[in-house]
Length: 171
Picture 1: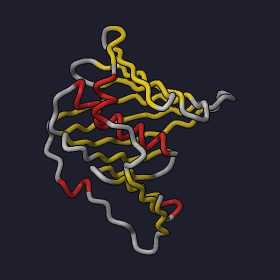
Picture 2: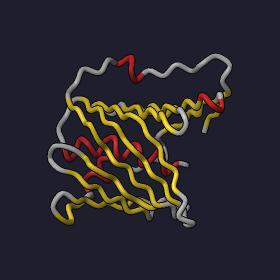
Picture 3: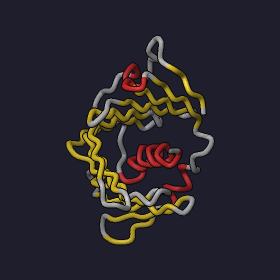
Picture 4: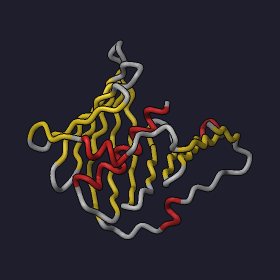
């Protein structure tokens, strides 16, 4: 589970290396395929700022919001009536990861962290896709589309409100 958080932080800040932006908004489709070739497809919207705030809003097949800031990750899962709060202590040094990402072909970058290799397909205008294999040997592909940069994003968008009555899990 932590690798998903690491990956989200990583992709959030990867935009800063490939593209200079103040804010970014993008639709995404995330496909997770297991070793039996069964695939789960998630869809949603991604928001990020150049000061390391991010929000992933999963809309299908389940509703979920994942908020990032400089110090923590907060996941709100309405179907479970649960909130998970965790810190970024176990994430890699983002600056180092970005520095280590190497262009291996035109518009193709790779970097490795804790045995996981991330392949990033990007142009100067956008990040198109991120591919990796997680620790459970699932093939993960996140495709970004309909990207907009430098829109006004109110700070309130990145403030999570924990719904009354939800269980709170701290990791």
